[in-house]
Amino acid sequence: MLRPPLDPPTARPLAVARWLYAVAALIVVMVVVGGITRLTESGLSITEWKPVTGAIPPLNEAQWLTEFEKYKRIPEYQQINRGMSLEAFKNIYFWEYLHRLLARAIGVAFAVPLLWFWVRKAIPRGYGWPLVGLFALGGLQGVIGWWMVTSGLAERTDVSHIRLAVHLNLALVILAALVWVARDLTALARSADSRPARMTFVGAVALALLFVQLIYGALMAGLDAGLAAADWPLMNGRMAPADEFASRPFLDAIVNDPYVVHFIHRWWAFVAFGGLMWLARVAKRGGDRRSSVLIHSSVGIQILLGIATVMMGVPIWIAALHQLVGALVLVAAVQGAHGLGQRRA
Image 1 (cartoon, one colour):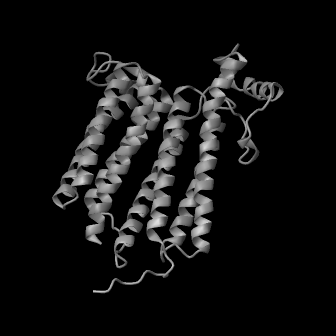
Image 2 (cartoon, rainbow, N blue to C red):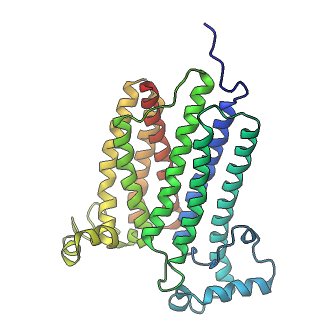
Image 3 (cartoon, rainbow, N blue to C red):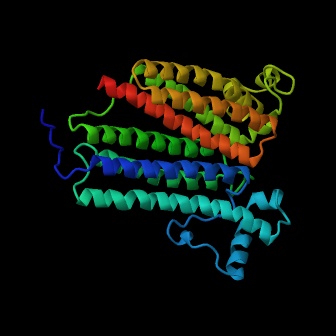
């Protein structure tokens, strides 16, 4: 039986898929660097948003002093870091600069190949505008990043944890979409009559449960809620934050109280675990053993890292590793959900 021709004939779905996987890998690195930026309290060290000229860091002592003077005007310096040395400022500046530099690199790594593939007519029919949409989401992510930073420049001594959650989870949505589209293109490279995968009920439920956990992980980071308790499974010797719920409205508590947010993130992990194990089981039953293994292993490691992060007092290296594995759990879950959706398609 002859293989159906690609549309257009110049389409190169495997090359496009590999490019998307590379961009996805950069986003995973970006998520980890963003986590370190938050953990080191570095996010407010650069007080201006210069998408182009900001790529050049201070190059001499005078420029460093100028940047330091800008930082001295914001509440974080005046109320928390007053008296900080220039060398200490350079340390926190490094992480925020690296975070923004990676963001610019991802933008270039997406825009230039997209234009190249488009001109060469290498993008299969039906995928061009979705890729443009992903590029637009990347641009929106940059705007949201600055919106997040501005929340800590005038009255607060840190960024809004709500805006941080929006910023982080949009990055994870983009990551999930990149992996999904890349897998569609990989299937198309194997068989020209392959159709895009459809989301199944099992996949949708598992991913929804996981995203609730990821949202609360971001709130944890924004509120420094990992420091609210250092024991497990109890929290400061208690099973549930009854006092915290009693002292403030429910909706306020589940978003703004560090102890309550920690409690939800800690125990929702096992709800998400149940959904992901369901996804892994269905994937394995359908013949996708690889996705099942990846989901099981990444989720198990992630839970252990979460417990270790809390009990060790949130050391930067293990908290960053926890964030890295969280992104990998999402990738594994998307792969499993895509496999189910591909069989349905």
